Length: 474
Ligand code: GCO
Image 1 (cartoon, rainbow, N blue to C red):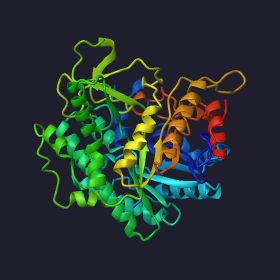
Image 2: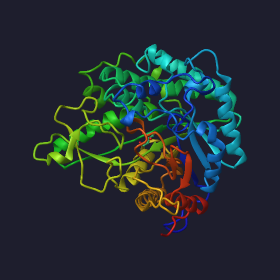
Image 3: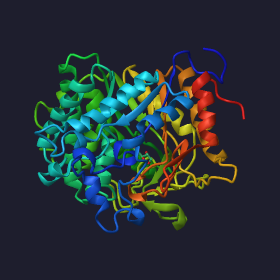
Image 4: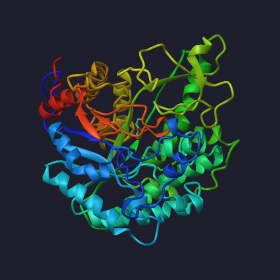
């Protein structure tokens, strides 16, 4: 290892996106409807009534965007496959035109010397499967494995790295408990069943991918929260344990240990007896991971109650690690438990900027995951951007965010964490879920009216980092 500014030789630098957030073309070439198309069409659910069109029209502009990836010196590109493009009804007949798009994308990436890293589920469940019960319904896990097999059969000769599910916490709890993501339900028991079936779907899909016989390395992208007690009181420490259980360990324990944590089962006993878990499920979920993807944005602080705290600094539990949870109590929280902001600088999402959380999350997951490779599969920030008269986007805050978090990641690597790569979120400004197009995370600015792309100063900074493995001096 060289000095404190340089990553190890071979460290992988990439950028990440997701199908619904960038592709547009929501009805092109046989694509079926997803739950996010339905959610967007439901008045009041998405800011400004924004939808998945036009997004970045990536479906038609992928070759141009791969050119931008080359300009940024990316070694890898993390994208997601839209299930409803491949199986418009969620199961049954394959839409060849849908698969053909991903075929073209993969070939274009390989021709550019960029590794394709594919996420199979980044929240765009086919509506037809939602109509049949969605993730609270066990059969959806099996349909997911069938879909994974179709995609892996077609792309597995060229795609080596697979993430089955992106952020099961968001898909289950934001979608089924807080209701701020599709399908917009507020049913804690259904949310817990959805969380379980997303994990089961991961396990079954991993088996399906491996059964193709292609050389596959399989992981999952988990948004592990860094949850800190607001104070050292026993009550706040207990609140942090409880929040950590339902935010993190309810996923990492089944994945890494093959069991749900006893304290979480006890904390949730008033809601469910977990009878939706079948005898063979946890063995399937705990199938060995080849790597673990870590999506990290911001730490969060919790307290047992708002008593004595500045009311302007507290919000309902359940606002996970930087996700737009929007308040409400996290699963199983007492009515009093809250999140407490610390008055740190915030991004345009209102997420507090504290790079030490990156070091903490990597150290913790390295300790819990038994030495498997870790990749930061998402890290980035939203700030308000404008294209200046000289046709540039000057975004010093975003550069500062990346520099701080990449430096923290390097410190983790120097401490022995087996972090093998980092994917910036995101390559392009894109559809930020319930925030619509109002939040810009891209290294590249997108004018949604003209579809013009402009590489931001942060994109130029990242290109120097990705091209040298050294943290650029400013
Ligand atoms: C997530 C998703 C991304 C988001 C990004 C910013 O982590 O929520 O994977 O789709 O857009 O994280 O919120």
